[in-house]
Length: 118
Image (tube, rainbow, N blue to C red; front, side, top):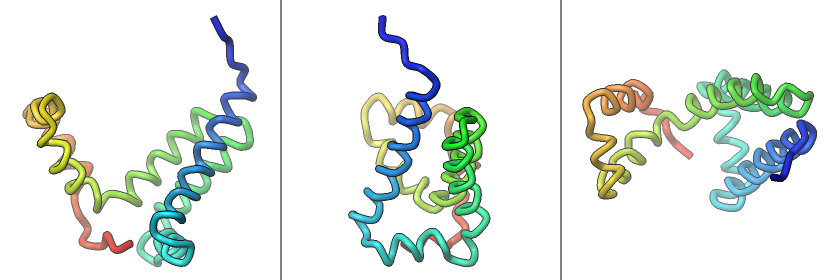
């Protein structure tokens, strides 16, 4: 069995964060990525996301991932309904997403604020 140290876990999380941001920049462009994160109404979400990345880098991966996940959900809240609509057409996932409890939770998370411009 291969054991991964805490330092290696933090390194992998940091590389994942870097690849996520650079992948977004490659897909929509550097300028649009900058404006996506630094719109006035998204400053709370962007702050939580980037503070979570720094917390991970400073050696608290679990706390950092929770803060980062909170920021991620706030940032991409507007895209969740479209993603769920797409995934509900996938055979097995569609059944799971249409269960009453799951459907209620997904609707609560994905309440659209009307500001999902990229």
